[in-house]
Amino acid sequence: MRDQADPSALPAQQRGLLAGVAPYALIVGGILLAWQVAIQPIMQRAPPAIAVRVAPGSPSVLRRAAEGELAENRNDNAASLAREALARSPFDVRALRVVGLTEARAGREAQADDILTLAGNWSLRDDPAHAWLVEYRLRRGDYASSFAHADTLVRRRDDIRPRVFTLFTAAATHDPQRAMPEVARLLAAKPPWRQAYLESLYASTEGLQLAANLALMLQKSRAPLSNDELHQLYIQLLEKGQLDAVRTVRARLNRPVVSNVTNGGFGDTEAPQPFQWRLAQDAGVVAEIVSDDIRPADPALRVDYDGYSSSRIAEQLMFLPPGRYRLTAESRAEAGDPASRLAMTVTCAPGDLKVLSTPAAAAGATVWTPFAASFTIPSGCPAQWLRLETRAGDKREQTALWLDRVAITAID
Image (tube, rainbow, N blue to C red; front, side):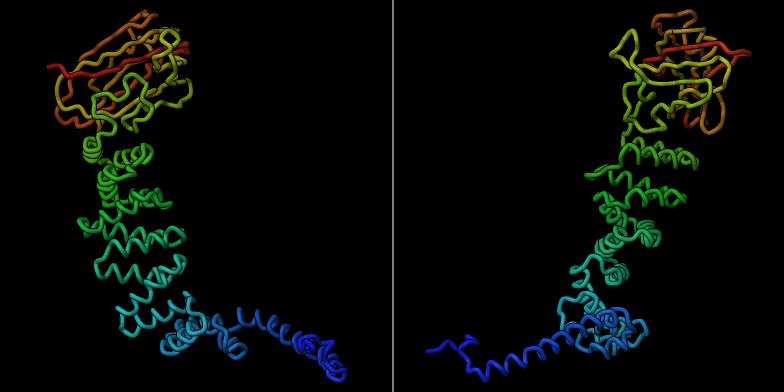
């Protein structure tokens, strides 16, 4: 028996017919292919009404038309076109979103919630679906779900961060018992917008209060405020005169560990300012924490001063209750006369009442020598600045001092 699939086995007349038809079939195929290529730009960029006429069976064209109808508030047309697009392409997220939004506009919010939740789960990049879900869940008091969808939005789009941040802050301020834990939960995940949100809170007194409360909540989470973030919070509270808030947050977090003087031995570089030493960067003064030449294992503060410029060389904030105290420290002179050019001071904050000013070195001591001075914190002095300051002379005089083991103890 001859093989029917073998063209050579066909009669000569049939082979001739096939040979004559083949070129025309190729031409027709080429025309169809060219048409498909030609209409692609029309399908993608032409107005939806024109695109639908050119390619009425294309799911993407139907979806674009549905979106256009929805934008013009022709909801029934939008729903019909979107459902037809879904019939041809069941996993078209944008068409599914259009169906969901038309359901919402028709007052069927429960069905819309189911549909748009599905669309949001299919694509984290479908912003309109997530935006609707944020608003809908928020109106129902479902902060956890609403904020989760808002998190999806702000992770991708910087331009809508201000609006979403305002949403977080307003909810946490007006319903702190329910909303604030959800904001803290999002921040504990360390999203890329965490720093930007914390900074947004520093623009108002209410925002600062919320930032302080979030710091307390985050302390118990897997991602408490870093030292840099805590430093920023302390400084913002301080600059806006919120000394009581600084005291409360520091005491409740115990960061840095509550003591009269922080890092008096100059070996703890992790403590955040303003409790950590802030070293001046002023002309005529070089202050740095380095290993001591005599005690290499013991870092200390070394000050190189021209004897003429004025500067607060080092300072940190303290919260000493009213009473009597004794300041103790060790110092040694490397050059000049530090006892006449440098002083340890304690000044009340707010205000400028100075309750202590004593030479920062024992006179003539070129080896490590302790010194001490007593002072009194009066009532009405809620916080204090401990400082190493200059006592400028009439002419330049090279002065170098080493300072270490600064402490303040209460006198019973």
